[in-house]
Length: 185
Image (cartoon, rainbow, N blue to C red; front, side, top):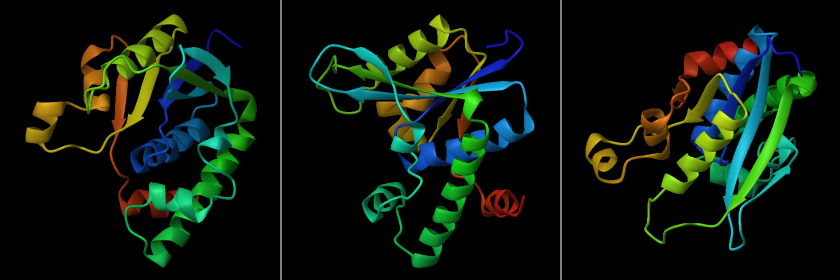
């Protein structure tokens, strides 16, 4: 890998928010030829932490099942679902075309706390991985929790933003104008 490349870490958990972040990141990848992207997933399991590479289509499948679409979409409107299929195909194509510049990593970890909404261990894992591998930017999707809920529980994205010494880009659900432009180009 070339040292002049701009190293971007995209955190993905398969959620709607992560989907929006992946789509936005795909537009960056198209427009920044020196960008090197790593898509990171952190998966909680019962054994000790481990690292492995994976095919990003495990998270963003080339032919999504209806179960995957239900997981990503909060609404089941057929027109909306068809639009997401188009967006997914385009994102897949961009990542595929830039394949040599797209790496995939999964980190398996054991939860350190049984407390609901405790994401501190995931934040720490993401930050340790980003710092160890000298990333220039971290991108993560965010739900935009209400201030009260965010104050009580925090959120992975906002806590990551507050803890990180690396710039963090938070991506909310993409507006329809962005989606339309994305699909046209």
